[in-house]
Image (cartoon, rainbow, N blue to C red; front, side):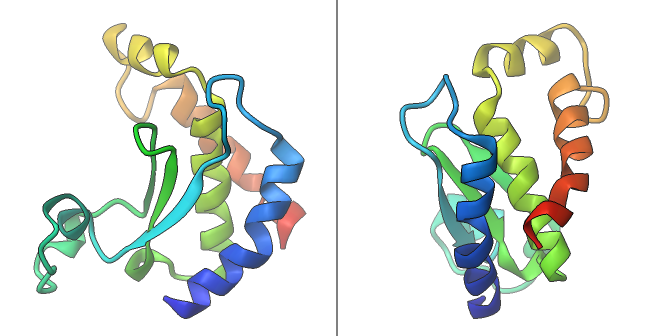
Length: 127
């Protein structure tokens, strides 16, 4: 986890400077580090059997945070891509995030997800 934190400390300010602030949030998101989504939501220690179901990262609009599930972070490139991807969700409209799902989009066809994945290619700008 310390390696992940070190990379975030170095790279995240560059991402914030490059993309700017959201018109939907008053503050930029902070970064949280969790072992698994189970541990994060239940508050119980993950014994190692539930972590496989965790996403790699997520933007929590309620807390205005980017959550990195650090056991899933496999490389410097991957950490940067996750930060870029989740930062895109911070910049996007929460109303349209829901509306696209209501319109029938799945995760893989959701225009905001497609845009966030495409933006991951910009990881090179922050390496």
